[in-house]
Image 1 (cartoon, rainbow, N blue to C red):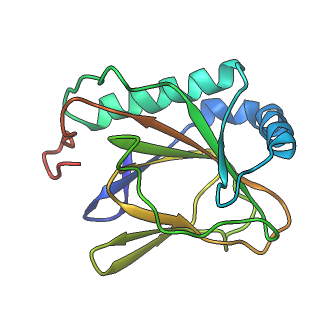
Image 2 (image 1 turned 90 degrees about the vertical axis):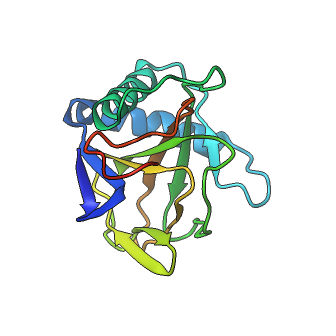
Length: 181
């Protein structure tokens, strides 16, 4: 687990190479659900309905990385193992600042596909804009309160990000003692 922005302790990332071999199959699962989905106005992400083992493995890896990165914590009874997908390309996207205050304590985003370096993920902390170019096969962690938005890309190929969350009873503290989340 590494910090994305040097001394800034609120965005972490780690590669998940063991999930890479599932990429094409999972991409097909997500895109099939995406194309069948009748999106309500102003909604751009959807809950994954598939019971495929990949999504359980993704959540397990996310939880394991959280256990590694943070001081011990306990899960709140409302914490779920659900997964949401955000699918965008140059024709369909939503670039809206948002947070996850109502749904999580720790938020994770796994980039299943990331075809275009223009499709960044931006974070806003106080008055500072932080930009990251997501890498395919990497998991990014950040606290629920951190404002962020996906940035449009130029490619017609789909960028697929999978959102996983957990709710803890405690305020997470990084193991290095540098920050409370």
